[in-house]
Length: 159
Image (cartoon, rainbow, N blue to C red; front, side):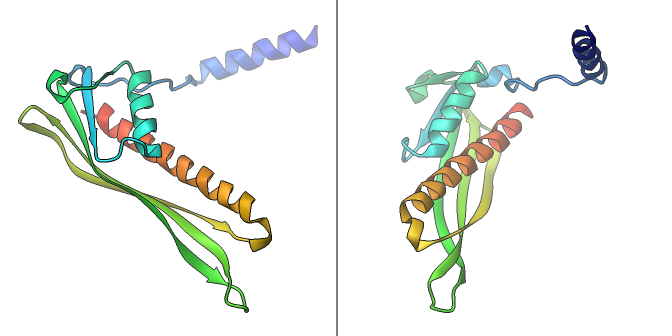
């Protein structure tokens, strides 16, 4: 008897404080049919951006002529830098970065001038776990791409 009452009380408190799940971003009607222009359409960022636009109710056009808005990805680059080395001069820490530069146009009108977003994460490296660290690096790149998509979607929602 106490458990259902406690759950009901928690639900009332959470609902009463104004908490609600964010859900998909509400985008301008200008973005209802959007074309995503990119040199490489197989990057983690491009795939995540198309998925996020689709989840927000935007029809992603396959032809630029059909679109009301064009999101141009000018730069979609990822890489890594060595942060620290051991006494034997072997890498111990890496920094993975992801940089995206994009613009948004509606016909001849520039809705967003070129915007550059760079995010970084670091991870420790152990040559004895080479496969696992390679997988960790891939996961970090995908997470950075998803984080940048969130930033881009918030900027698109501000239009």
